[in-house]
Structures are given as C-alpha cells and as structure tokens.
Length: 94
Image 1 (cartoon, rainbow, N blue to C red):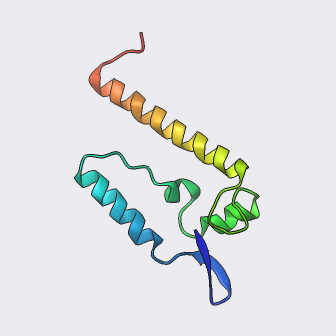
Image 2: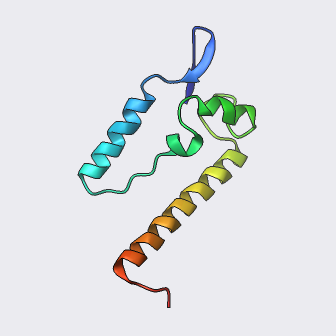
C-alpha cells in the first residue's frame, strides 16, 4: 500500500510495524506467517510494482499480472515449507 506524503508516493509509514507485529503474534501462537510485504520487496515496493504494471492505479491493489505473480510466490513458499516439513518428519511422496 502506498500513499502520497509531501507530494511523493511511499509506503504507509505504519506498515513495517504492522508486518512485524503480525509475524510476532503468529510465531507466539504457533501459526504460519508469510509476508506479502516482504515478498513484494518491502518498503516502497508498491510504487515499483505499479510502474511495472503489477499494481493498480490506486497503489493498493494488484493488477491481474501482479495477482498471478503473488499467487505463484505464495504457492512456491507453501510448497517449499511442506518439503521441509516432510524432510523433518522423514515422510516421502511415495
């Protein structure tokens, strides 16, 4: 998410604190957490995504191309973590 501050587009200033709070809360309660903020590139990444046609003109939502990329990244992250889980548990795909 981006907003205009002093005439410049930039990430909402509170986003890093919210992302960190969500991560900490998830970890504290044994839940998985995946950060779309970090998967995009972190601070001010929505501006770059929009310039590349991956974000919408509102600087909040993704374009369809951006949705596809983020969906692929999430699926890959889940698959990677499942692979690690199976290795830890000694489970095979057979």
